[in-house]
Length: 85
Image (tube, rainbow, N blue to C red; front, side, top):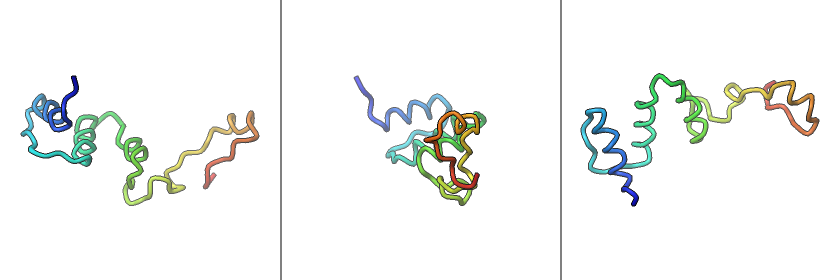
């Protein structure tokens, strides 16, 4: 048995003592996730996974794309280092 998305988000909000919603959009789930995971260090990775801007930078901007470890590049010549490194 599956619950409706509105029921799911209201279950989480009720547990936290927050008011329930009457309608729900995908952005509500992202916002709720940020509140639930506030101090878990997850926001950056969630933004990148959802292809959302990170502090004004595109999710794939070279300033926030991490390098592939050199040890991995050394053992596999088919790997191309990410831009900016």
